[in-house]
Length: 121
Image 1 (spheres, one colour):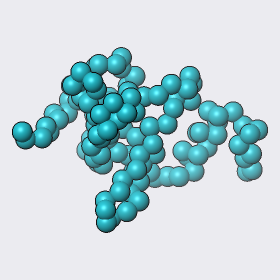
Image 2 (cartoon, one colour):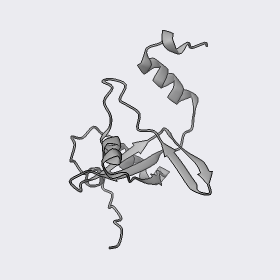
Image 3 (cartoon, rainbow, N blue to C red):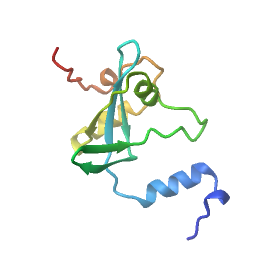
Image 4 (cartoon, helix red, strand yellow):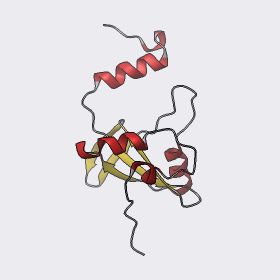
């Protein structure tokens, strides 16, 4: 099979790319919005790029269907913080629940049944 990116719809190219790099690790990116509401979202575009300093990369790419950004990216721009965790097999169902398209301000921790671990003050 030969794919030429400019000759394939973006949604098709996206599917081919995802399917060609497998299995992929999945990360949970947790952020907080400007009102203090937590956000939790899984990302498959994720990897480790370094260990000293620890460098984890995830890519909250624009949505293919309408070119909008995810709440995670909006929150990172607003607060400059993100916590990355790795999804294990035991967390698959909860990860799936947190990946649903909820309106801004909905707490995906609550929707998925996870409990956030907040920093001690």
